Image (tube, rainbow, N blue to C red; front, side, top):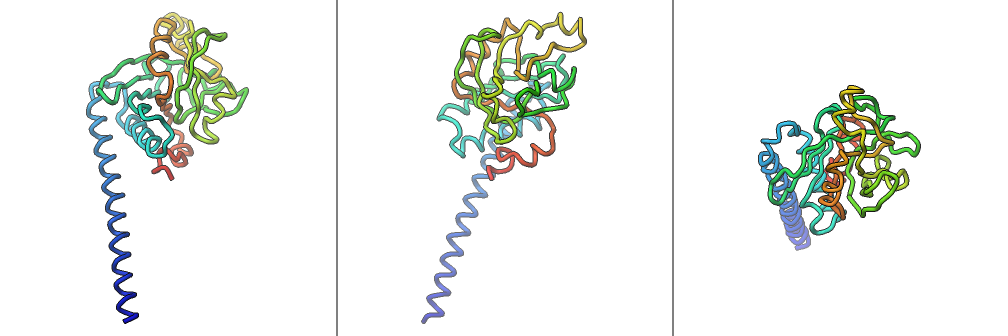
Length: 233
């Protein structure tokens, strides 16, 4: 009788664990299918690399599941691809709910990160380097660079000192065609993602107060270590 009871309990537990595993696998597959559907929805945005968009969508899904964003925080997504030259559009604001491209823009990187192509990224105060990873937008203010948007870095050791470093989104006159003609690149910030003055306020007001910003570069240490890119583990 004891053996039979133990066997029954074992079978029951196996069934429960199997069901849980199946549920997890189903949720994972559903998230993957949803991400692929979103990638296809933005297929016409040819400059936006599909691999980068998939990573960004994975990060959004993980942040949502981990409770790191508000209920409506995953509707808008800003993707920045720092593997592209500063002379090329490399910032996109996507309305994931309506599957619409809202903005495609130039964006500057930090002077410590490189010239036309940034290659160095940091979370360190005084480095004047750009940070990569997942950010959440916060409030706005008017400072030395005019109307600006505070950013909270969500990745420990990667970008979580953004507030301390005053890494914000703002407009800057060196983000212009004139700078490209004169320098062969955009001007550079102290690490902030700076935009054209003519569009900066509109972009900031669109994405402020809790949406996500995904700043990409093919840094292998970050790609392998980011909890937002590896199943929230």
